[in-house]
Picture 1 (cartoon, helix red, strand yellow):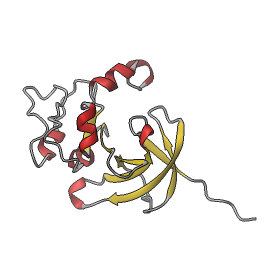
Picture 2 (tube, rainbow, N blue to C red):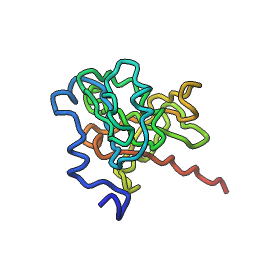
Picture 3 (cartoon, helix red, strand yellow):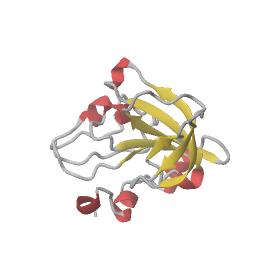
Length: 167
């Protein structure tokens, strides 16, 4: 599926998720890295060692979800934009996905957006909660996007609302 469409198969996605109990505990990284290529910045960016050391630089990353704090350093440092942090504990109804963002201008806190799935299809409304963009992130901001909890595992990007054109 990935080779044909650029979108991973459902079973590939499910195989990379931490267990349900860990998801309920707080923010945790999700890796959607499916191709063995020479890449390991995620390992070196993790300040607490939650990403296991690579035996071979071509290996896929492995996360120790129990160690992960959801800091999102790996999100900003992944050149493939293939890491996200999800947090089911944000509020009663909403969860937050922290995702890489390399467009300008950056969105604003409280901006209303349209959440998108992996194929770019609209899945519902979203709201920007925070934008983190510092010099350690190599020009990749991390945007915190609040969405309905049932959409957290589906949403992987967003589009900004079209501005109205005044006559």
